[in-house]
Length: 327
Image 1 (cartoon, rainbow, N blue to C red):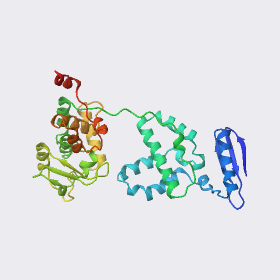
Image 2: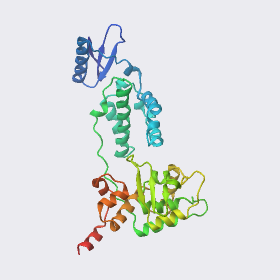
Image 3: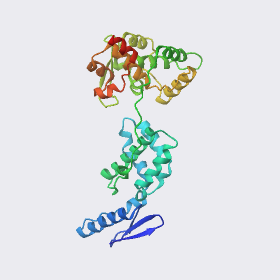
Image 4: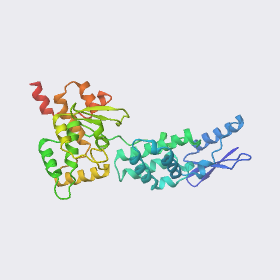
């Protein structure tokens, strides 16, 4: 049967079952401790007691290690996921046994991280923890409730609405023009992003065998939503592609995502542009395309958005331009 004792600032529950290790769990309140103790007592009476000794000796970091081996390689965003999960393993939180991974501990982690990073970063970290625990519960028989469900998430940040104006675009192009040690691939990749609204990952995955310049289309075999998409190419996009050299790897842009981000950030800094990310090129492209494709169904077909609600987050018309249309 379960016993409850006050230990410093927590309420400790001990469950003794013949033939099994003693199970110990700590709670922030006596009420929570009593609920859990009653649950374990009822399980014993019904003969369905579940051994939870593994959650006392297994840490979150150990779960992450297994997740990185069994699950992450199958994910489309594997490279990013590995980086994020390895960074999460450096946090004190990851070295705690699962039995001590309570909502209050996670809330303290949330508040501490909010002092150093944005709300969006903390939301993603909590999502990673939740995914790892849920997978362990479903697939590995780890008997622990997901504490993330009881942790209040930070307020989601507002969607970005950064769009390049003509002057900024000219300044960026000037700083991307190849010279010295500047990459010869950065100007064309930015030009193609502005002409097609393709994401950085889609541009870097683009292969020559999936491009038909005569019919002015590029086929994206895998996209963010996991579906194949055919992207129409403007005459400017075709001209940009025709001016590129072919390489033996068949990739149109033989660069890594990190290299593109670093080169783009350096160009933005040289151009003295404020708060500009590579993904803002997609916002700019879709906003410009809206003038040529007023039919939202057609615009969504080009951008690859599954819903008009998501498309609206990328279309940022100028209030002045709308006023002119109203007359």
